[in-house]
Length: 116
Image (cartoon, rainbow, N blue to C red):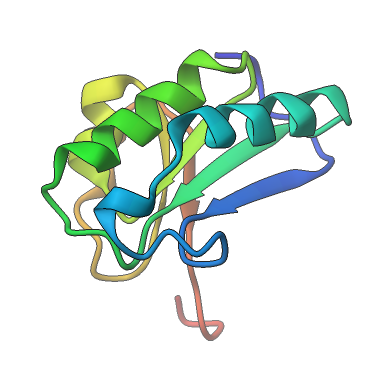
């Protein structure tokens, strides 16, 4: 994975793409988006799948397809275990798992006020 640099951070959000059900996920289109973002100068990709079933294999397939389509850092939203298993970074909220599982991996952390 390439080092993270300041710049355009692309969010591949399955809900925004209309992929709220497993059968709607379009892996070839997702990889096209990632390649286009990379070509346009993006510095990182975050994969966000809020509506897809948590343990469904399509989540892993999407993460792998995105990671395979780019040399940019890829961050998974909310899924510590899958990020660790795939060697990817993660973006976590306050209740999304133990970030120590991602030792030496990129980590984003949502905060909502100064105490966080």
